[in-house]
Length: 599
Image (cartoon, rainbow, N blue to C red; front, side, top):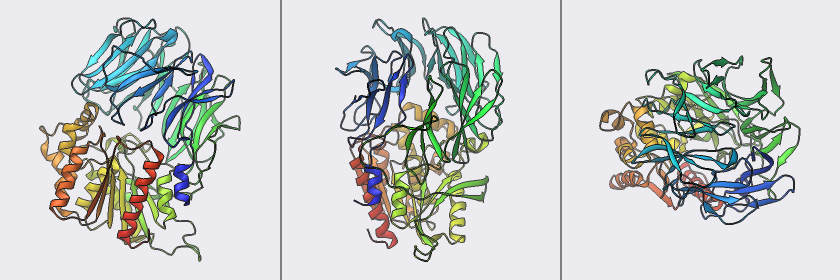
């Protein structure tokens, strides 16, 4: 078995979540069976039990506070539309968690003391609604509804308050917060940094204080040039700034006793963790290896468990106590190669790119440059590539390609202005940054300009198709997974929450600003595409729906453009390892065939 395939097949485990009132009971995700599913873990007894077992996998789930129930979201083949189910922690039949609520897209879930549940729902026809499911199993009742996107943030420790993150002001990229009573939905407090949608400042609910009767809410805000936490007393309105002097985005969560905060600092594609003591404002760094933390949680004993990896080393669930917390049995993923940091001057400022070269490149026995190079473009768009382990880039490296990943404007982790720059000239802005890094890669001798692959998934797939049409001389091959290909048709078919995001990005709907959608849609430039195109698409994808991809492919066919299309029976990506390997194998073969390599 080749090394690249082992990295996909190697069993993985996610960061275990634990029940607030039964911390010995945990829930985690693993692909040990070949499909990502939920697993229950009793730390006292040591037993691990598979909870879900569905053909296309399950990853969305949580534990009730008392640890007696596993809640999990049941959709149809990855379409993200469905209902919440629940199953006893120790095993048993799945039952509908809220049988009176019709299927919907999930919009947050908060499980409170005594068994009360607050369920967020989103539908294309009705917008967002929030419902309370009583602990006694009584009829659910509605406490919130609005046509714009929103969702449930958290429920207070005593189960009397819930915070709703909403975008009633119309800016889907910057949420406001409303705290309401669980009993009747009446408003307790409001916090809106957008000032009714006139300012691009968002808020994020990070959780109520874990103390009964404490109405303080930990809030992420953008009042500086980056995300920072503060404490908002929802009973008095008092806001308490925290003295955290760190240069990157800062997120936080409460320690279980409420005395401190676990601070996670993302800066220049890497992560640090700290303990912030609320009594004296001291900030103490926690000892973690260099790399990225993709999830962390403070345990009742004061230790912190976190999921860590680097580009060179595969992920592991670690503890600040020094041990590995949880491992999957069997094959271990082979290591890859580390990343190099590159900064390139671009039209909107300095662009950070992460570069990897095949093992041995630059040595007498290694591959000589310039190298065939893959520009792997991240999705989101409000996301960022980091110094973290990823089997996809490692597969390209194993086949002799250099890999470049660009944190273009719109990416997180580089300040608020960098993220919010993605407006109105959607897609074109990101491609300007990618082009600047491409020019550097060629000029530096890293990349062979005749063997350049542009690829990505989701938003990265969209940028791939748009780049092939707007920069036709720049790329040798294009490989787009689950992309936006025809923006107007995509808007018509996608879930309502994404329509709201598109209206924010473009400044209106396709009817209101048609020229912006036309300028940013890959199908506008399909006649200019010169490189061979490979597209993979999920038949049940609610985010980048299949009809708009078919429309684009029909135009490629009509224009006699070289292309291949692979459709699979899942949603926005697959949770089945064998299917993912098949997709990567097809992508590698396509790229190698068109860049002169050997499959």
